[in-house]
Structures are given as structure tokens and as C-alpha cells.
Image 1 (cartoon, rainbow, N blue to C red):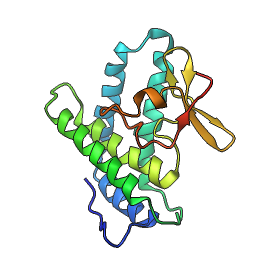
Image 2: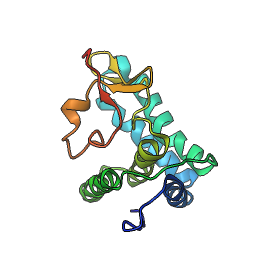
Image 3: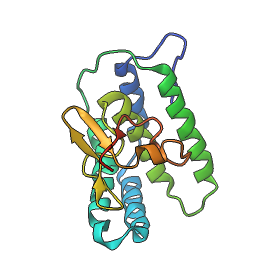
Length: 174
């Protein structure tokens, strides 16, 4: 997925440029395809929070591609290469699984991979933005300077989720 020089280290600025290069070719057709996938996939979500779920995913993944492409902020610091390698390996495994699944939208997954790395390692935000709903009326929240998630502990070892490298902490009130 990403061409990184693991020996010399990778700065946030370098990773940002690489992610922008990956995001640049994503066009309106892929964005529409990914958005349609989210809408279609939401039919499996309970009706009482489907609209909020769709909005959260479209805002958190699809619309962030434009933000990433135009991000000119200066990000300082080196990255935790062990954590980044873990994240990229997990995403590569997920991609291999999704490649054989005819029902999965490859445009969505491309955006999902790029934005998951961008939010976690560049923005230092959770993969799912605050307000993302989960069953039981729970959602990702920002409490002071800490992001909390109601499903972090139950999903952190799920090979199909990005919870294992997401910066959110378990919401202890759940």
C-alpha cells in the first residue's frame, strides 16, 4: 500500500505526502461508488440510527479524502513505526480478504485504508469520528483530550476492524 523507508524512520510530513499521493487519483466516480456502498451496506443497521451511521461514515471517510488532498498543515514528529507497520499489515490482510469478496466495494476500501492511516497517524484522531453511533445508543466521544469508543475492547482483536490501532480508548461507562 505505502512505499515507506522503514530503516531511516518516517515523519508525519513524509507520511502525509505519501497518503496525498495515494489519494490524488481517487476521482468522483470512486467517491460515488464508495458512498453508494455505505448507503447500501447500511440496510443491515438498525433503522433507528441508520441515518446517523451513514452520515458519520460519509463524513468520516468519504469527505475526508478532499480534506486530505488539500491538507497543507505542518505536522511535526516521528511516527511510531511499530504501530504504523501493525496498522499497514492489518489493512493489507483486510484487503486480501476483501479482494475475494465480490460484494465489497474496492473504492470504499481504498478510501477506508488511506483515511484510517491519515486520521490515526497524522491527525491523531480516532478512525470513527466523534458521534459515530454504535448499538445500544452509544457513540464515539471526545472527553477533554481523550477520545473514547464503546466497542474498543470488544473489537481490538477483530481482524476485520481497525480498532487495534485506533487511538480511541475504551469508554468505561459502557
